[in-house]
Image 1 (cartoon, one colour):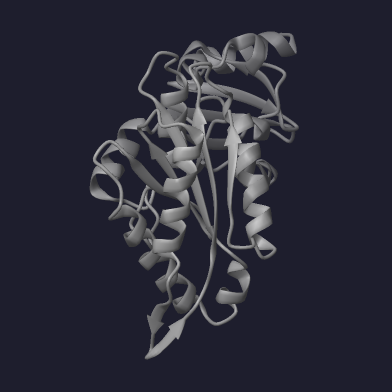
Image 2 (cartoon, rainbow, N blue to C red; image 1 turned 180 degrees about the vertical axis):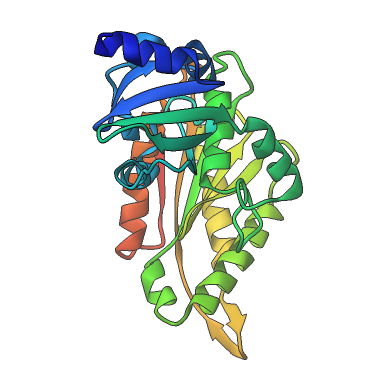
Length: 279
């Protein structure tokens, strides 16, 4: 029996969605795996399994592959294509070949969102976490004639210096700022914790950029007043990036590039400023 026939037999008799990986590269996938991932077979086979995950999860997938044994181990990840939440079950077949089961955890994901679970929500602020808010954003971007959309990213300037005062201090500030922003939003809007130092707001509005800047300036001023902690007022400033999404929807990559550039600026001091971007 040839290697190709052997791999085909393994996939044929494995239940559910299955992928065969050799030295990190996908050598084969059954129909269920293609359906679950939403990735065409011609793009799936030959790709790196780790590179299918969102950027921040790629090292974890690589480590799981290296440590795979003949005992099944499970790991959850998000596919970069569509941010689909999936669970992988890894089992080493021989020295080089790993059988990876793949199943969708979208239902669990939605139940967790309803319950405010840690899969979709930030434990400190209780807000939707980065992946949940980005998943919602991508759904909005994928509808060309959908509702008008504007984005507001807000970061605490020089967050590391606050963190140096203690985790409880920085956590309290993030909770307070999250509550202050949430109190100023309308029903259709969505707020999430984009990263440790920042938030992302999805606004349902077709306001002009100058109007959006006025809204962002006011928001920055209103949320950046000191937070009380153990009888002491802790001061901080924030930086805001605001932009509108045109009828020609941008790629998620373009949006993230703009947001992450502003994040880096805020991390180095920020300057208590509001910047405008056009997508």
